[in-house]
Image 1 (cartoon, rainbow, N blue to C red):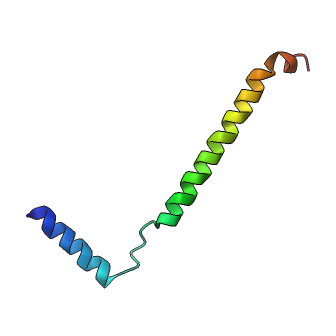
Image 2: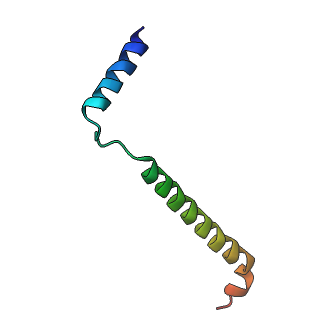
Length: 59
């Protein structure tokens, strides 16, 4: 009963104030893509460094 009341209050609030400052789905997708790209780049750099570590030590 309490959960149903809370959901109804939330829906009424959303109808009354449509722009409540919630994070949009697009923003979440952009952040996930950015973090994934950063992890992939860092992983690639770590892989290259570990692969050529012996050759780089003489520089």
